[in-house]
Every structure is written in C-alpha cells, then in structure tokens.
Image (cartoon, rainbow, N blue to C red; front, side, top):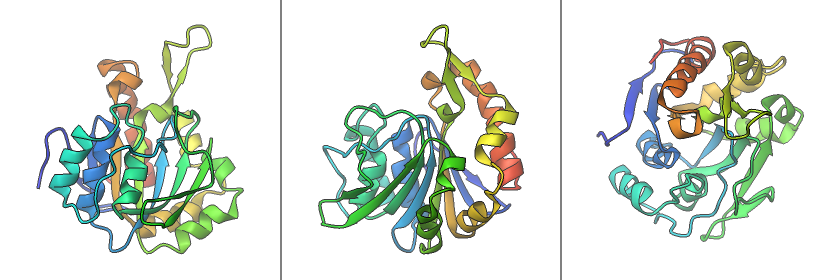
Length: 235
C-alpha cells in the first residue's frame, strides 16, 4: 500500500526493517499504522519542536492506514504538532520519549497525558539525548515495551542564527553525530533498535531553509542515521 508523498524504504541493517520518508510530519500517522505494532509502541522522536499538542479532531480507534492517511491530511493541524497524541488516541503509541527544544502553542508540558479512553501516557521530554540519558525512566520505558518506533524531523538539525532568527543554520555531520550518539548512549540505542519496528523521517524543507538547503542537510543527517546508527544503506 502506498500513499502520495510517502516513500517507503526497505532497511536491511540494524533495527527497523521498514522506513518511511515524507515532508509534512503529520504523515507519520499513517506510516505508524502501516508499521502495525503488535501493541501500542513507545515512540522515540527527535525534532526541533515538541509536537505534543492534543488533536482537536482525534482519529477513531480501528482505522486502517488508508483512513489514517486521509485523517492526517485533512483533519490534523497543518502546523504538524498533534500527530503524536493523535496516534495515542487511536492506540498506536503508548508513551513517547521526545528530544526537542521548542514548545509550540498548546503543547502538553506535563509528564503525562490522558487520552479520551482514560489511558494515561507518559511524555518524557529533554532538549538533548545526553540529558535524557540521566533519566533512568527513559530506559525503563524502552525496556518494558515490546515494540518501539523511531522518528526524526530534519529540522532537529538546524539552529536559528544569532544574527537573524529567520535564518536557519544547518548542523555539520560532526554535530549531528555528537547529538545523536553521545558518550554512554550505546545501551540505550541497543534497547531501542532491538524493539524498533519502523523508522519515520519528516523532511519539512520549509523548516530547514528551503529545498536545496534541506537536501544538503538530509544527506549529512542520513550518513549518521542510516550508515552509522542503523548500519544500512543510504536512502
């Protein structure tokens, strides 16, 4: 099954066997549906923004991937900030570990969030993976899960310029590597990748300095994520 604007990858390295590339981050929702975790999965997401806004139009439980795709495109927030809690509402995600730096308007900042069915979900947040590793709860959340999903937004790897906040400065490969694989993170990554069913990767070029700049950044980030972390071929 394929959807417009979503490219599926077959991964043969360490961790997930399926990968999905797309632009608007809310399209992660149907991809998580396609990944079909056995039970609600723990999500590890890297982003510049905490996409933890509660959906005003949450999807119903039991929707197939095609219906989730339509819902994501037509009912979720165009700011791409509510797809994670939407996935909790429809039973795809249990808890989330979010590494990000900016809080969109309306994002849930509490350590838990209760979906409409009364289930309480843990929201573990940190500005860096290195900081997150100091929280033992993060590793406990991963090791207690049967399935995990790994998610990236390319704009995680840009920083607004000090001289002009509207100018985005892309990170070099060395900084991306240090950010994703800080010292002492091997045990954490081993636990994540042992359980990981799918990788989702949002490119969102408008948040990365435009098409040309985002393509260059995607190439740099892909070397670290695909070749070094997942030990598989470049997309």
